[in-house]
Image (cartoon, rainbow, N blue to C red; front, top):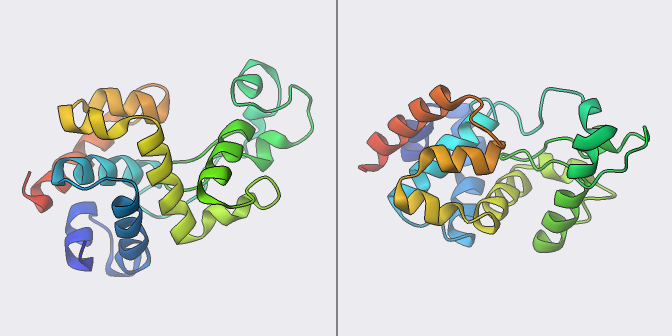
Length: 177
């Protein structure tokens, strides 16, 4: 995807588009996000998850993922040992939790358990999003136009749905969908 198309589809500044267009385009190619429908949905979702491509790391500390049921669901230990903070959401789709770091690291051939910060690098942030998208069956949902279903898969609910839908509308217009 060309830089200008990426910028129109995401509404990002020239500076942010220059940082993210190439890595995101490579990830879309690698993970079969190959139609305008899929690309529009992908750009909208990662645009929301990354606060408009401003960050590849969740703003919260990750402490909520350190103990209790949420920690266990993410594959973290139930003890207060810091793994919630260590494996907090990173990458353009916010890979979260020990289990997802293991799976993503294996798929991308990165040692994310020892170096979770690798998901902050643009190419790894984009590839992790592409991996999660493909691994979670998001292409099929995008093909059906099930944007709410996509949001549930990515977010676990419908948090930020209005913003995601606004981004989707913009991306579809830019990509001619």
